[in-house]
Length: 246
Image (cartoon, rainbow, N blue to C red; front, side, top):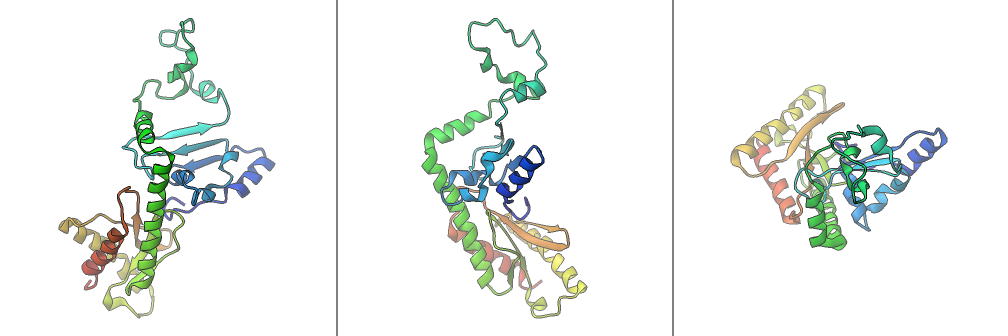
């Protein structure tokens, strides 16, 4: 699901977990940002039923790396799992509420205050600002998928659920031919060569990869808050320029 940006049916999975008394963890590291959008939050319908969830604001929300969150509805669980009760660190007879000493709740104990970056951005943008950012990235992904479907030589692998747009580029010499194993072998070489071209030109960075039975395909991930639709036009034009004569 990470490669293609798919959202699992959380409610249905939660029903199974509830039936068999299983712990349900939601990996929202990438897609969790959709919760900030009224339009796209239904993609995570049922997430409130999870026992725990991870979420990386340094992805869709654009918070500087690194900034990762873990949630659990089971109060006291983190202390039970990680607490070493080090008396030289966490004295219990302090004048303030010792629950503010969070070090005993994490594996690291001492660590950077990474959440401060998220807090500052939230104070600046607010809920509505983050929602605009998330919506824009999803809309740019939809626009790119539309371009890929309409442009000769491009082939969309599947409609994007998140901001992952996965597609093939087929050079002119391979268009209209029977899709034999040899043909797919040639297609697998397109991604690496086009990536080499864009890196040498310094024009952009778009990833490629295989997945299961799928040979190398382009995997455009939109996670830049300043992305606009004209950037998507450039992506398609540049891949076509670099790959048409391969």
